[in-house]
Length: 511
Image (cartoon, rainbow, N blue to C red; front, side, top):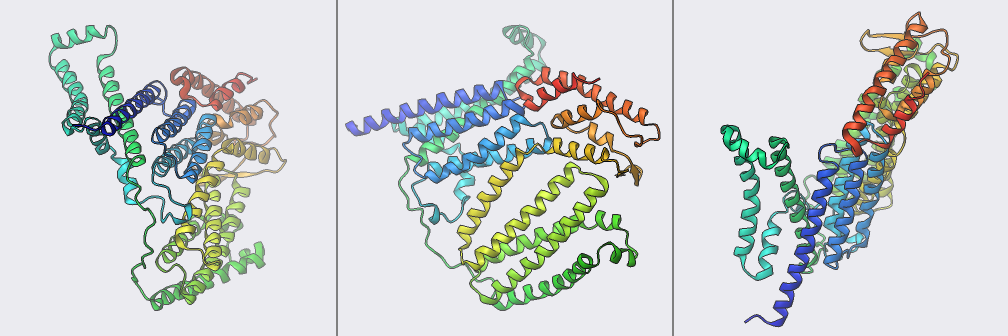
């Protein structure tokens, strides 16, 4: 006989499962009509916000959200979704997808875990996080079976759900093999494209099951036993002793000091020093930045690994690591100066913008490592703070109108009254003028500045000796962009960004 408490729990579980099912169906519908075919722009932003709301609702079903600090992960979700809705830059679209979905996964995991103080969290991504995020389907059968206390129910449900996509595939195969069979099924869907319909149905079923499984996984965690998440402070295995670290860091420091000496020779000698060495200012600016960026990245990795292995408890390991960071700081300054010279000589591009962002971000993160080591902050705390900092700073950076600023910089530089040049890779030569080909192929984010440039008077000089020819080429590129943008907005609907619509309005004002 079932007790009243068992019956009550079964009813509550059934009700919660029904609620999660309705939420999963709603999310699947949003996915189908918005980002499924055009996964960027306003459509993706609405979908991401819907996902966040759904996760909050599911957590509420389990009276969860016990870790209030987990809501910090929603900040980059909102910022990156907003950036995707506004801008059409491919870099922004890629980073916004990675940041928003990654942050949502972290929020879903930690908001439904047993309560634990932020300071006591060892790491944001334990092994269980990847299991629950990548493959949450096991929770679906377990949760369904608990409703009636009969594991066969869960098995039947999962078997049926798994069978649906295969049934669709077999129907599509039979339709391709037999014209009468295909005609019979096609008539059911009237004029619909049968193959496309089957594909979209299979896709939506798989997505819907995933949403349902993820929701039940959140409920499973929310109603799971309150396990103590406070891990025992275990001593990390001593892979190497202090002598190894001191030797390793000492040798690297010697090499870095020699290289830093060369950088100071340039800092104090300037252009005259380079000319005396037979090095042109332009070649010095153009060469070496990405090698120095790579070096800074390797030092960043070395510093964090040593931090993880030693907690910076060993005196000389700490001193040598901080010294290496200081020397890398000089190298980072040198890299920034080189890139600044390069931009001044040849103009600003999207690659150079994000390269500058990366080198500055690495420099700030290395500085935080030095500060954490000096103030004796544990690796666990420092890694969490650094990760959240990088996540939030990058999310904010996505909201900067990058390509618009790039276009404005290059145009104003060209109109400044000086004969500036750019490096034409196809010709492997420096060309006096403006790289109108590059500007015309920027995304919709830059169109306002491009139209402003096209509608004003150009200086006498240009890429070609005939400035009228160059201007005609540039305007023709913008006209083509206007025509293609009209088709794009008509085709993708909400998949277009706000920037696409603003760009089309600006292009209509072309003289």
